[in-house]
Amino acid sequence: MTVSTHILDAVAGRPAAGVAVALSAADPAGSWLLVESAATDTDGRHRFAAATAPGVYRLVFATAPYFAALGIAAFYPEVTITFTTSGEPGTHFHVPLLLSPYAYSTYRGS
Image (cartoon, rainbow, N blue to C red; front, side, top):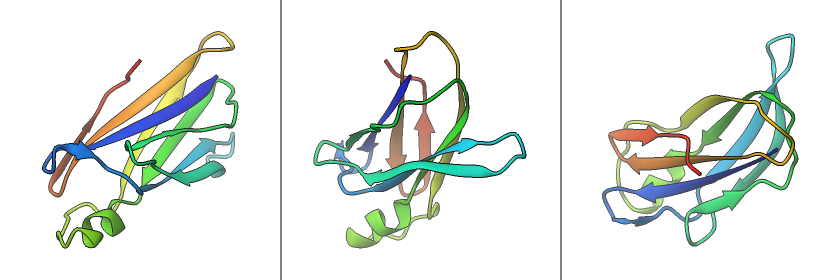
């Protein structure tokens, strides 16, 4: 299984490029193990290269530096989205983030 994300800046009306994002997996003891980290490309996207097994994962987006570079004070210095994967090998999970300085939303994309 694979995971990707896409961040849209709802205020600017464009992709959020250069946002650091980390994908971690929950281990049985309840700790988080880093799978991969990267930054979104110029289109606000990142597809993680690591193959994932069924389980609980989280994406942590470093939103404070993104907004600071734009000269905008933001309420959320980071956004964490925790989700569960399951399914057949080859399944893809896309987790979009719609972002603004004082709100965010997400959903399971395709």
